[in-house]
Image (cartoon, rainbow, N blue to C red):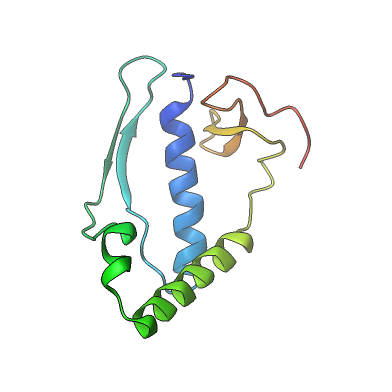
Amino acid sequence: MNRRNRVENEVGCLNLISTALCKEGLAIVPRVYSWGSAATSQGWIVQKFMTGVPLDESLKQMSMSDKENVFAQMAKIVGAMQRLEVPQSVTGFGGLTYNEHGELVSDVMTSVDEGALGDL
């Protein structure tokens, strides 16, 4: 695991996806209140606590109409994520981090320490 941008990548993804989903009226991503980089310490994120039940725990007991409703909501979420507007400062594939100006930019993947090589 690449510690250098691990937290920044997660915070950047949470913010991007939250913005995209809020445009659709879906406030389902925890709000990030504060964070600290793992590049110089353990790294941490303070985010909103959100309640819920894992879908795999409740799907079996749902009626067919409830399942249809859930899958329609999932399709709405996927559609919003597909319409997500990636900032122009993100120019490659891989992971994300923040530059010295606070802009979200491309960086290496957190899992394999590679990426941010190709253009989008």
